[in-house]
Image (tube, rainbow, N blue to C red; front, side):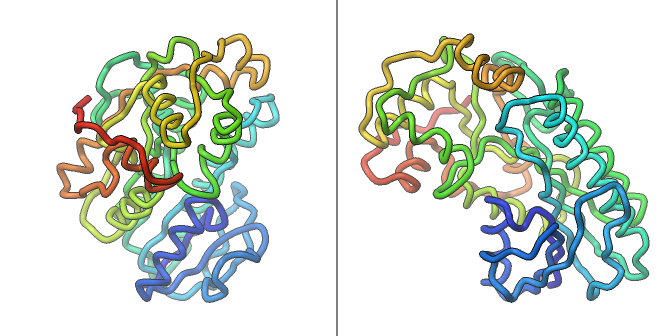
Length: 309
């Protein structure tokens, strides 16, 4: 099959491209610059992710588009950064769909990234794909991001939005930022640690993106493990995985000083479960946090019994 990927040079995208090439698919990717790390079999096409139509008319006939492009959220949210976060998701998706509209032979599927931030801060409420959106900056971005992706339905494409949780894996993602303080013995829970924290192993996320592309599912899918944990539980499990203490909580004011408004997202509670994903027949290789961290950072993490949220 012939795939077009945006965000191919990111943490998720590189893993996805590798899997596609390994199974014999053809890969094209849109990016500002040619990647020096991607397999050269992936064909580069220049696009800055702007509101203008993506230049896809010169590409070979496509079967599937997987759209992962977006400014990193994990940084201090200055007004300029917030604008980049919005534009890199909403306007870029609009431009991508406009580019697809110009094609004589259109792909059959668009799989577009979204985020669990769609649900806002919801306490202990169990959140499935059928749950209503929440409020706040990220929720507003996700609502409009998904709206732009869904415009591709009018072009005859099957559209899937994958609402991605905190992604765990080697050499990137959330753990790249979390591990240094934990290894120094100063990692700890955020505040009281009672907020729910959805997560997913990078291998499961890549498999889910391919499942969304290859199956007949449509609409929203939660890209999160079936077993969300509280921040306190995540902290304890990560500490055990790397054999470091996690005794000192991190006060909210300290996180706010470092990250500003973005710190609010770290204290939001999102008890997200992938109900539609599992109902569609997808099975997770790493449903439990201890098991996932054992694979990523080393053996010796007690997995414990499987808990349902």
